[in-house]
Amino acid sequence: MSILDELRYPRRWYTKLLSVILALIFFAVLATLAISAVLTYWIVKPQRTSSEINMASFPGRPDEVEFTVPGSAPRKGWFFPGLRGAPTIVLCHGYESSRGELLTLVSALQDHQYNVFVFDFTAHGANKGTTTFGYKESDEVKAAIDTLARRNDVDPKRFGVWGYNMGAYAGLREAETDSRVRAMVLDSVYDRPKQMVKIGVERTGVGGFPLMVTSAQTCFEWLNYAYKSDAALSTKMKNLSGVPILFIGAADDPELASITRNMFLKAPEPREQAIIAHGNFVNLPDDEKRTYENRVVTFFLTRLPVTEIPAVAAAAAPTKAVSTAKK
Image (cartoon, rainbow, N blue to C red; front, top):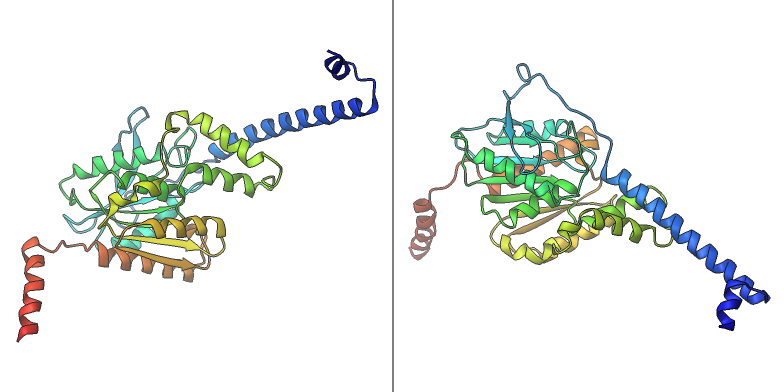
């Protein structure tokens, strides 16, 4: 009892010092929790920018397509038609971006006769809400593909996906359970959404404070408690065996580049890797943007050709090669 009494009513110098230290620790932890909660709110609710185009005059003759995400309001995306019956490339924008910032990539793909679809994720563009950094966003990708697959002017079984950070995670999460996705370009993809929360906190400049990152990640996971049992995407990448994937990492974003590199190493074949000097496609200078677009288009042309090779012809091709060799 004497120890408890001394702590409650300190009389000795060392118990007074201990009381001060404990009080400082308590208020430091309390301040960290409060700041991290505010940071988490800012991170999951980014500033929205709405992108609108004049559908009648915009090159590429886009259609506005409405699709429904379970438990959410109807969404609208832009469908840019290519060759009838060709595969469709779904473009998934990154965190704090929007569909309107991907129009040059849309044009590059459509020029090669692909159908292309772009839309805004939750908490981006005109859509309200908060981002989950890929958990719910993957449901949006699925809803978009389901709607597009019902059209009579696309190949319902052949889709490609391009995504940047959050969009890459959402696209990959959907592809691991969706056989219709036949090729992917994953730019700065991460393995778990909380890794993106860490990067968001560090970019505010307070990531170096003790427990700040951990507290923000805990707040984020509490907000998304329904997904607490979700495993890292890399644990399910074996499901993508046979699906060509191009992983892109940026030298000026070393943390995401390192995560993307690890994802590449865990991915099954066929896989490719590209390291570029500068990340975030929408902010690249014109010459770097054209080089980037050419790389993406070339990958899809090689791995997801506009016109599918008939199964009979594909099976006959190796036989012909063997017989020629014998001759």
